[in-house]
Image (tube, rainbow, N blue to C red; front, side, top):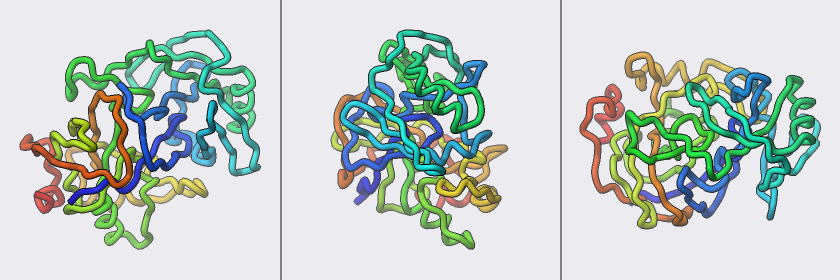
Length: 282
């Protein structure tokens, strides 16, 4: 049996994640996941890819706010769920442009000081419908400020297999999944097409291409060549190194750690098969 073992959200894109036991689903992913985002002077998103220091901001959910702690000096700030400003502006995530709402001058000033670069925080209001990649999802599928899709699924067996190939084992937080499951063979998530969790229909739409963020220690921001160096040896397809499956869904139901993950159909398209690893998962 496949069982949900961990749930995570990352309320502010590229900052620390929060582990949950129960997650409310929404029309664009898990509730609060990537609904906030830091931007630069050009209204473009900020990421650990260029600013590894962002990993040092850890988050908690309070009754009416996010609490952000900068672990370097222990300072904190609360970010209200309802922005204090009404200003709307176009913001850029990769090739997408959508509407974000400024949150608070005080919050902007705090992040600017901590990061040492001009920074503003924006929120994605409910009225903003940012389309997921239409090449791989059905019309009407939307995403938050995540890179492209509502959620990311990874099997614990896949990380366990990777760790047998590494000199130093890595934690799951290097890969920033939303849903982790136990059971099954390594990389079995690659071929998952239609799945259900607690009766919620979800669809695997695209394998996740990994970047240098996976090489950043989320506690110390130390960088290394791993895991990309090792993954490139057996998880490369074309120019991409693949680990995890992007999911699409639209639900207001709840999923929890301990729920069963049921697989109703698997992919047969060539793009979902990665070297020998996927073949062994069939």
